[in-house]
Length: 211
Image (cartoon, rainbow, N blue to C red; front, side, top):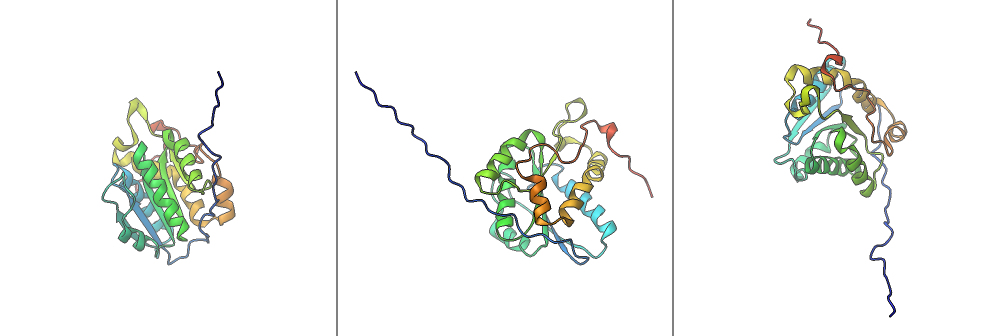
């Protein structure tokens, strides 16, 4: 008896797409804030925006909220965000929402708008594989801890803790707002580990200094 075995797959063919061209943030730049409705995503974006405004008082913000986390952003949202100098995008902390968060970022980058996308660590490998499949394996992904003290997930952290997370991770956002395309690409290509050494222990976060 003779059997013939066939391999039913073919080698993947991908065309690598460059991330959008970047330049240092102008003093009068417009920063987009894209929230996908996941808990604490909006608060994190707002806190990053406050920190950015403290050093860049003339920067303006365009805030957009997706109607659903597990879908692509709508065409009107996409059109508005293309007018921005860069878009901060949150939050990928589950399977479907992290996929669509990355998908939205790739769409914006392909259209020429730089992005910084926030995900949590358990989804870093999956997200990096997905953006690689979309041809953009150097897409900048800001990876934050998912589970904190006593098993508390990111989405259930209290507002003052989110503020401290924003302060602790702000240096990475500053890098993404100021670095060249080449530096961003080198920093994030194939990267799955957090670029910011952020502990998931709340007591290790910086304290908030009251003014």
